[in-house]
Image 1 (cartoon, rainbow, N blue to C red):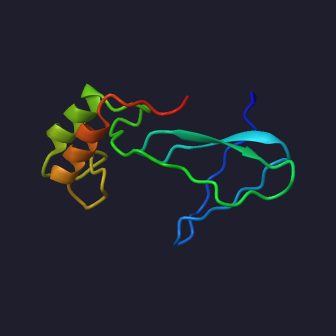
Image 2: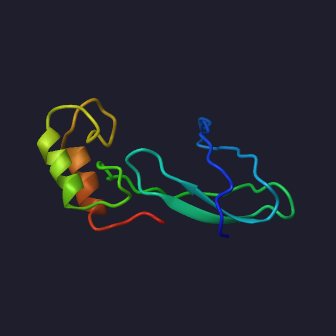
Length: 112
């Protein structure tokens, strides 16, 4: 698992299922949706399609730098009551839920 094969934007089904066309082999598949930390999982496609691959994502990356730290906290506090990129729950405004997301994830980093 060394070189990147490619990058793709995929749509999620209602049940959050997704599909990717990748070569056969042992692969690392990563996802980094906007204000979530990057997560990678190992998949083995040598025997065919893989079903049931699950990403457990952590929200709170308001700065979109793949870590939750003081910069994210500052972003949420500065935008509190307004909208913008610090609206982590995508409710239309920055509120207590967004602040809680940063506090719960504080100190975490996404996968490289």
